[in-house]
Amino acid sequence: MATSSEQVALALDYVQGKRRTERVLQAADALLERYADEGDPQRRVHLAYELIRRNFAEHVTVEYDGITHRSGPGAATEGELRYTARLTGPDGERGTLSAGYVPPGKLGLTGPEWLAAMRLFSRIAGIGTGGSATCP
Image (cartoon, rainbow, N blue to C red):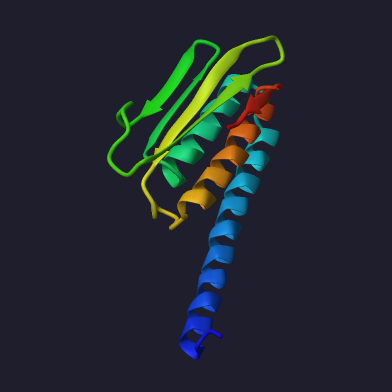
């Protein structure tokens, strides 16, 4: 049986995790709202890149249909989690979304929370091209 202090710590972890998840969902909602105002697939990919770079990963590379957006070094840094998804547009255009993250990052996400957020945002980026994303 957990002590009172352990129960309080577990409750605090739960509340903090819920807040982190809410911030991810708010960012996803904001990106989708911006997509509604932007019909160009290349511009949508750029919007996804900017949102990820500003909030979720310092090292981001998005390549799609001959255009590359990149921030930070290409090589992984010590302790960095890496994520890569393939983007496929409706006409067969191909690209990738790659990012690196060292917890806790700007939003305090744990490694598993960050990976889940990256799967969400890469799928949104894929849909924004009119196609899809293949996530690990």
